[in-house]
Amino acid sequence: MSTYTILSYPNNLWTKKVFVAAEYGGIADKISYPSDFNMGVSNKTEEFLKISPLGQVPCLKIDGTDTGIFESNAIAKFIARVGNDKEGLIGADDVQMSLVDAWIEFNTNILTKDIFDLFAFKMGYGQFNKEKFDKALESQTKGWSILEGHLNRHGNKFLVGDRVTLADIIIGFSCSMTVTHALDSEFRSKYPRTVEYCKNLFEQEHFKKHITATFLDKFEPPK
Image 1 (cartoon, one colour):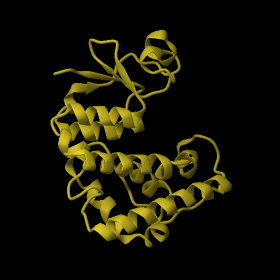
Image 2 (spheres, helix red, strand yellow):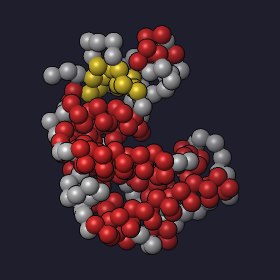
Image 3 (cartoon, rainbow, N blue to C red):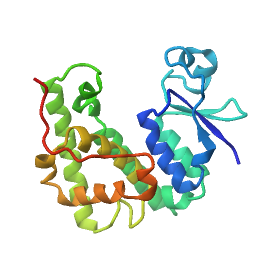
Image 4 (spheres, one colour):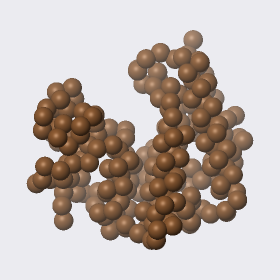
């Protein structure tokens, strides 16, 4: 079986969903970080740009080849396909596969829209900006309302049926960051079914190996 190298600084946040997908597929031990990656240098080389034309991390190199995958969701999809749980993670038929893709698009277009404006300042990146924070919160309100309605209408345990798919992994990762840093108990109180969904995801064995979430009690803007 092939092995893979994540070209990035170690423990890149956006690779967590990749490793969860790899756990479900039984290939987490086939993925590693390089020991000599130097952010700002390694990602500027011609060799790197051949497989990641944006010059951004993470990207996944298929060891022994000149081929790589860039963009974290595309990497997660690739790992889901080459692992041992392909049908479970990306869908057993055309309809299921399309539904998984649709929820991944939902995550990109709504749940992660301006997401860093919710908490990047807590990580030392930039300053708190109330106008940007409130705008990002509007996207979360829209996203959580959609999730709440969908889960209530269908009664499924997860987004596409009653087992974890790649859509749940990607959305669960996004929610793990927002509930930890920005979406406090007052916000979450309006979405009980979505909170239950998130808690169920975070308790999954493969999630717990790579994704942690602490539900924020009250968001306090910096003074």
